[in-house]
Image (cartoon, rainbow, N blue to C red; front, side, top):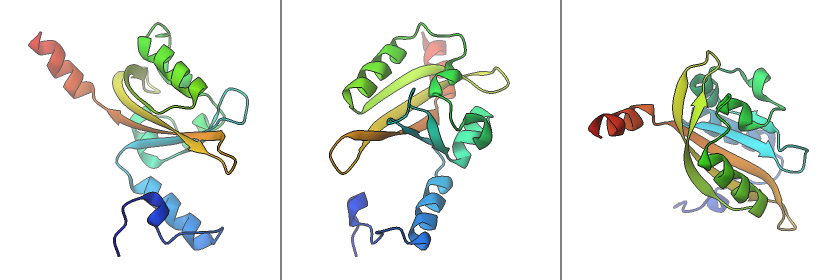
Length: 145
């Protein structure tokens, strides 16, 4: 069997085994993954995987219910923030690079891909964010300049 799209996966319904498989798949990713609830005020995080915990230094319990902005510390003046706001407001996908901070205060460059998740009526109900630490690459680029 060939799987070319997520909808091709033989997973359906509310079968606990299927839900466990999907959660295990997300937790097996080397990329940090979060899911936010766009139907709630301030689009709070409702899920994060283990890689996100490792990347950010925050535990699942510390991030659930918060908006992702807390990762930016006091660096609110980044063009990527405005680009993210426009994409979320418009229900669009986007990839940005922005400065984030780990729980201990250490700066890291985050390559963030955000994609909307649509409900049955076609409305944006959630967003998924996939995050990768690109600090080494950004430092190498800076050293070449």
